[in-house]
Image 1 (cartoon, one colour):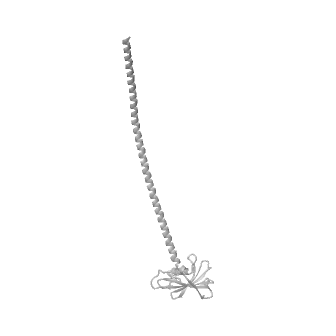
Image 2 (image 1 turned 90 degrees about the horizontal axis):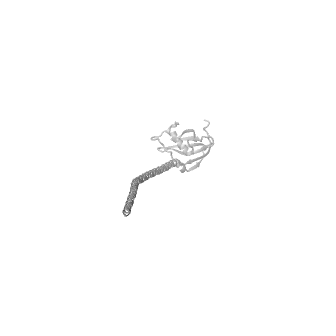
Image 3 (image 1 turned 45 degrees about the vertical axis):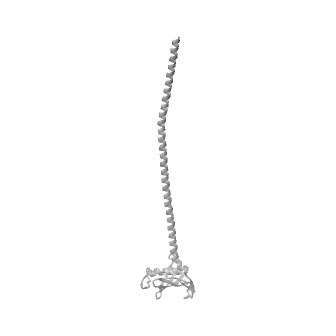
Length: 223
C-alpha cells in the first residue's frame, strides 16, 4: 500500500507539471500570434497614416497653389480694371478737351448789336470770333467749288457764328463779299432760322466771322 501510494502521488505530480507546461506553451503561442498580428497590422496602419499625411500635404500644396493662382488672377483683374478706368478717364479727358477746343470760341464770344444792312434783317450783330484755322499754306486765292478746302473751312466758320451744325445746316448762297471776303446765306434744315454771315480771310489763320444778320425771310429761296 505504501509503495502504490507513493507511485500514485508521483504520477499525479508529473501529470500536473505536464499540464502546466502545455498551458504555458499555448499561452506563449497565443502571445506570439498576437505580437505578429500587431506587428503586421501596426505596420499597415503606419503606412496608411503616412499615406494619409502625405495626401494631406499634397492637398495643402494644391490648395496653396490654387490660392496663389486666384490671388494672381485677382491682381491681374484689378490691374486691368485700373488700366481700363485710367484709359476711360484719359479718353474722357481727351474728349472733354476736344469739346472745349471746339466750343472755346463760342464761350468767349462777346457780341454787339449793329444796324441792319437792309429791311429784310430782323437783327444784326458783330462778335469777337476767332479764325477757325486752316490747312492751306502760301498765298491765298478764294475757291468757291463745293468740295474745295475753302468751302469746308467757310462752313466751319459759319457754324461757329450761328451755332448750327452739320446735321442741321443748309447753304443757300456763298458769294464774293470783297477782297478775301465772303457773304453766305444759310439756314437750319427747317428754314426756321435764316442767317446772312460775313467772313474775312486771315492769312495762315483761316476764315473769321465778322458779322451775322438774322433774316426775316430767305431772300435766296426763290433762286
